[in-house]
Length: 486
RNA sequence: GUAGAUGUAGGCUAGUUGGUAAGCCGUCGGCCUCUCAAGCCGGAGAUCGCGGGUUCGACUCCCGUCAUCUGCACCA
Image (cartoon, rainbow, N blue to C red):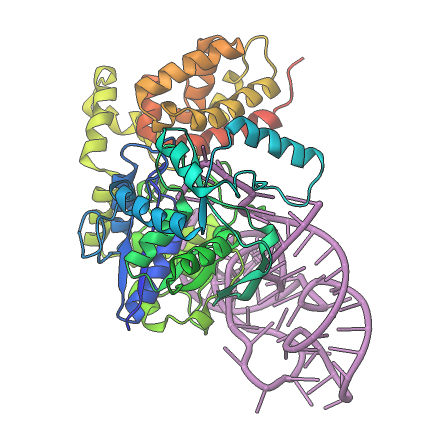
């Protein structure tokens, strides 16, 4: 039976290189064995849902050339492929679990749960998790309370004793004692399923035979195994890939690295190169070859060629690969790539609009917008403009640091539109008792390398979130290194 | 804290019947060249996390230990 695998991203932000990484291995495995590659959108989190994100993820994966056989955009026999459109399916399956007693309703309030957690932390308990308060409620009574509209969740009833083994094909058998597994919430009080329920139900219904995902899921896999068992379903084969890391070995994060696929596209990495580079992180041909095409990877793909460790994502090697591949491009192909990836008409138009009033000659245009391109900037010409009256460089650095951290936590601002950025920035100044002018000057210099530039927030939006983050990080490092004026 | 995973040069990897480590990126130097890039040549860099054990011999097998990472949400 040909395998069926899937990639299941959540539309909660920009398309992540980690998603591409996992997608690549799924893709290679499926294609190698003539199987199917499914794309499913896991949008069960109402809070973190980000409009436009789904579209961006599909676009990014398509740009990379990782095509899927079934998905929300291409359809398929196992749809819908968006979890928010499958709610009745989860409810129906939950009923089965409730009826068989493998799940139970829990009426505990947030407050009780928070307090429980606090108590467990204070007591330095070895196990942090639900205490089973509602575990033995009479099912009939619980149902009545539920029908009466009392808010509740549904939890998985994890067996008291014993253990569950996860037969991971990359790591070998991994055992988990049931005493360490929490009675996981399966249905949230808002009526949406959690990842665990939706994921298992969908994987089964969609005929997924091999679950290839990031190592971050390893610890919750026993819950999933238990769920398959509760439903009486055959579990898929598990493969947990090592996580992509920052240079300090922590999980790859935007705090330390640009992680958006869009960023790599805009900076002009070739899609095939990015894929090739990602492949070398964990996969090897078995010989000295490390430059290979997607098709070559597919043809050679075997799990014995995949290493389980979490590789450091080293942008310098990516750049070396990319430079090599650009050199190998025909003049025609080079032109095409520059025009479609870098000088995109829509982006150019926005740039032109920002430059319009400031142009003296038409060809001022290019030097004027030059900072919209490229990665890091040279700040030496403006280094003496970095001092903010009454603030030390250190204070400025700290403020900028908080600024980029907080932007991400603001549901509006993280969409990176000019309006949202302005609102956020102004209120940020107010909260920190900084003059907008002072912060905005630092931002302008950091982002453009100049003291005079187009309107700041339009500039930021057009530069792109990752480029802005990257440059502000550079600026922060510079500020910290500057000797304080007496 | 606890569970699990991972551990070959600064980074990514190769090394699958046990015979003291190979390639790429980076780094350093040289050649070439109007300059830079590219290209070519060369160097440094690993007691294979550490400690035991098995063995004539271990990166490869066994035990222990340490470090790092990830999870421990009504987020995925």
